[in-house]
Length: 265
Image 1 (cartoon, rainbow, N blue to C red):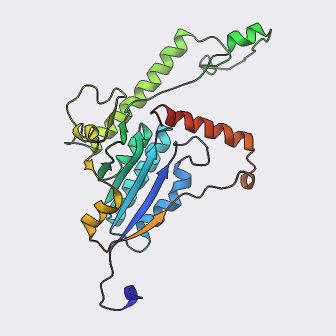
Image 2 (cartoon, helix red, strand yellow; image 1 turned 120 degrees about the horizontal axis):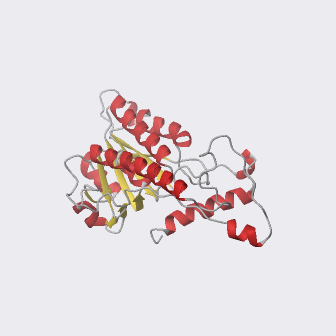
Image 3 (cartoon, rainbow, N blue to C red; image 1 turned 45 degrees about the horizontal axis):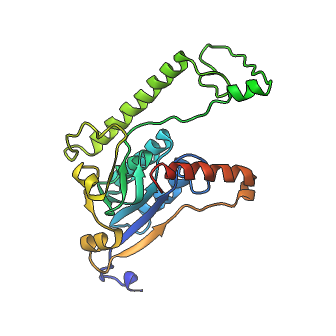
């Protein structure tokens, strides 16, 4: 009841937002702009928080969803004049690092993985298998580029060149974003934007993080020992509620686990 007594100052509150999982991949724990919008809005506005702390554990995913979420965080921080702190757990790589870079400061564990500032496209080729089974792939398009990188057709030099161009453009966007938000902090390292990753203090040395530190002690250091924490997490709906089959959910989970596995997690 103390917080409601006139002229008695209440203790500051830090909103803690958990961003866990791959970005925009459709799994139960995946992150996208739509399912984080309400959570972020509440975190920045409910109870006039002294700060918003982001708990990040993501190997990346969709560059567009990463950008949308990052932009929403920056807009809310500016509109509500609330500082944002990111705390990296196992990994903030690729799109996960994009989310972390939406914060005013980035803090990591000694063993956190940060970086992977690059763009990846992964697929498979099954045309040889189809040929061996006597199956013929038939594709009809209006527009010569419509069936680019069809996994059931042989890869062409034109398709590869087109994909390289697209990935290059996305990479330029990513690099520009990181240089903008971490201006004056980044090391002069030619490997910084090659997709390389760094651990803990080595990431700090590269300017990818501001220091090694954990959420609770760091927020107490900034806002006092009596700071309150209000947590916000994504709700994970049951598959049947949205008509999603167990098989579809399992495939999404496998895809997400594969993303984490790229970093030995």
